[in-house]
Length: 222
Image (tube, rainbow, N blue to C red; front, side, top):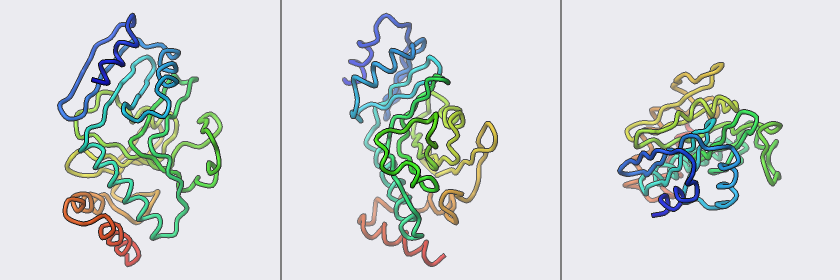
C-alpha cells in the first residue's frame, strides 16, 4: 500500500498513525521541516498522496474515488460559473504551497486564482512570501479531517474556502485571523451554498456537458 511505503521513509521520527475507511490518512508528529521538504522533492508531480504540514505535524492523505469525484465536480462548477460570468480564471489544482517562515505547507484538493489570476499567470512557481494565495480553495472532507486546515489557509491569507462534508457545501470567508460562514460566494457572486449543494448530486444523473451548460444557463439568467 502506497501510504505504508511513505511511513518507511520517515523511520526514526516519532509517529502515530490514524486511518479512515474511505479516505486513508496518516498523521506523523514531530516531523522536521527538512524531512517534509525531502518528501516533497522525492514525490514531485505525484498526486497519489497529498501532504499537509503544520508546524511539525505531517498528514499524508490518499484520496478515495468518491473524494476525487466530489473534488472534480466542484472544480467544474467553479469553471462553469467563471466562464458564464466572463471572469478571469487561473486554476492551480492541488499545487503544493509552502511557507518556511511559518513552518506550514498544504496541497488543496483544488484551488483557483480569480481576482489575482493575472498576477500569477505565466509563473513557473508560486512563492507565498511575495505572491498572493489562491482566491478560492476547495476542500473535500467526507471523512473526519485530521489536521485543521483552516488555520493553515488563514495563515497564508486564503480569502474563501468551499468545504464539502458529504451532504452539503459550506462557504467560508476569511474574517481577520479565522473563517466565518457565509451564504454567498465573494469570489464568484451571486452563487450560494444552497445552489452548490443542489448541483453536486446532479453529476450522478446528468452527462458532464449537460450539467456544465445547465450551471452556466442558471448563472447567466440570475
